[in-house]
Length: 214
Image (cartoon, rainbow, N blue to C red; front, side, top):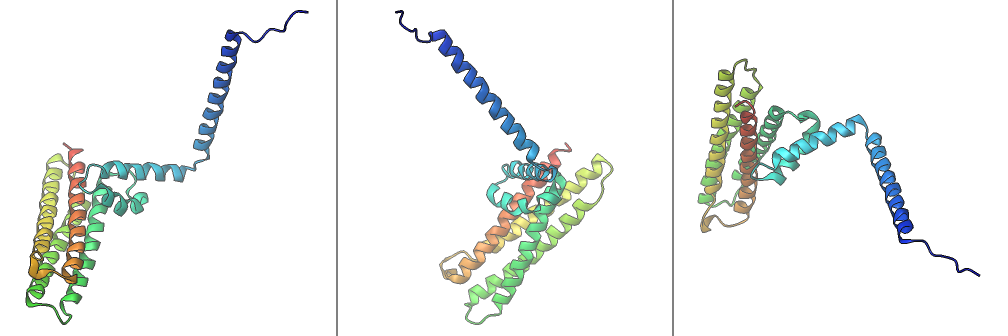
């Protein structure tokens, strides 16, 4: 009686190739199905947030940049101008709330004279910063019909935002030194540093927007 033969190596290889093809087809079908299941709104939202993530990656503080702007993805969409403007809006809101909190804190009892003086100086500097950021937002909102007008506008915005960043840094420096140690210094410097970081990010996004027109 003849012995039964085992599959040849070539037949086994062909079988494996067929399995790979089937698995690939199934994976491709599943991926296509997933893309089709994503609604147009969800697909747009994904595109918008990826635009923000990519843009923020070029800033000094990318995580803060993305976290502060991703919630505004629907408004920003994929517009470099809206991204820069929204970054300034977020910075302005943070600067205004911090300035109000510091004004309230400066009126509390128990502050050392050096702390009180630094607080009042900082409030004044933050006020200047708020004005400069507000001016920048208004300037960005205006229409510019010629390259020369655009360059003049963007130069003004860059100057104002840079000045705002300088004011914030000066405010923060006012709380340096051992005599300023304590909860007040920790609370104030933490908030001022966040505003300065937001301003730095906004300036980077403004520069990126300007680069698109060069």
